[in-house]
View 1 (spheres, rainbow, N blue to C red):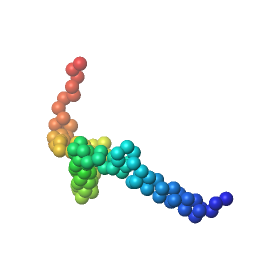
View 2 (view 1 turned 60 degrees about the horizontal axis):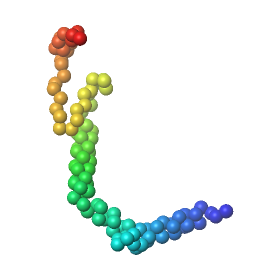
View 3 (view 1 turned 45 degrees about the horizontal axis):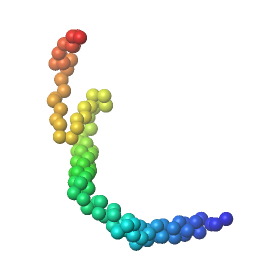
View 4 (view 1 turned 60 degrees about the vertical axis):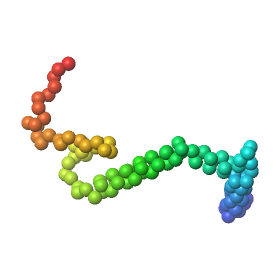
Length: 105
């Protein structure tokens, strides 16, 4: 049996050849690396990267706001969550402010 270190060496060797093939072996007029680069340089891919980075920044901002907000005594079922950029109306103060139940069908 080959020891674990030998298996890792073989895996690194195979990975090295795979990377070299990806970068240097032509697939038509371009290598695989050049094909990937050409696809990622399109305007659609640039827009997707920009939108993804904006979404990541908004998500981390939202996490930071929640992390920095003081803890509340509300039960988790009473906590209200809105999508980013949407503001929820204030909750009713008590049952008297909720109004009569809707019984219409």
